[in-house]
Length: 79
Image (cartoon, rainbow, N blue to C red; front, side, top):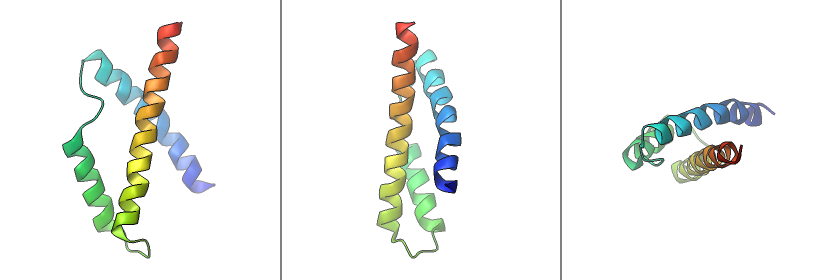
């Protein structure tokens, strides 16, 4: 429940960011920024998940956020 609710709150923000990046012709992927996010969440995790597991989960969240932004853009371009 709570985790899904938070992810669903995050997705519209990711869609807005994706639209901003497209409007200003910025790359959808910012490797340095993603590395920083992964480093920070791994450092703040108190366990019992291992840091590598936390990183995999957050990589999946970032990937799905980009996918949602791309789907939204494609849907808007069809209108």
